[in-house]
Length: 242
Image 1 (cartoon, rainbow, N blue to C red):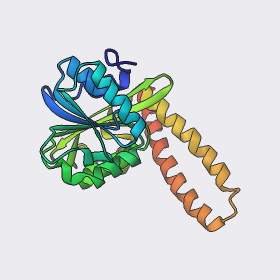
Image 2 (cartoon, helix red, strand yellow):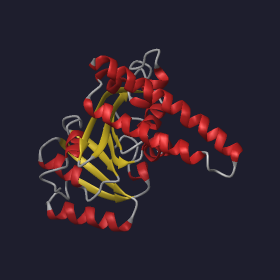
Image 3 (tube, rainbow, N blue to C red):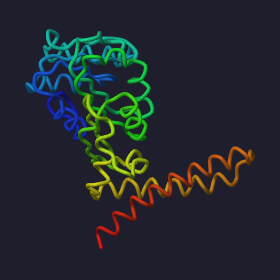
């Protein structure tokens, strides 16, 4: 991967950046996404945020090598603290767990006042992001699920609006699997949730070996509930295929 050829998952993120937007890429990973988006005319300006010194220096060098110092500002900071209110139209966060992404959004939500779009690519637990979006009046407008190099990714796009709009009476299931992804029922969707079900079955077997039976019982109930939801999604898919 380089600034001229992104991975498929980052290409999917880039394709959702609004035309001529000023965007902030949080956890920018060598500033690949900002450099690509600016070079291809997909955005007007960008901020690349990094919390650690090593990745920050790598991003700075990448931007310098591309000759994009006038268009991309590389900044050190934790999450959304690298931007000021009203400075960007769009925020992208890719390649992290959904719990961490939701935490970054929560801790920096005062910086999102004038942000029009969020493009979020969690590696797992996208449901934590969906719950945050609902609680903070962001409407999920698009979802994509894709497989690359044996890993499965989801890309969530949200804008200010009616946070309840994408959801039906099956809200709990849709929060877990994604309302649009559940409706689409792609082969990758089925593959992801079959994997998740298999992993939870292993977790259940290990729980029975735990020494603290009270804590084990509570965890077992939570795992069984999630497994039930996943099997509902998989069964729904199987019925559609027959």
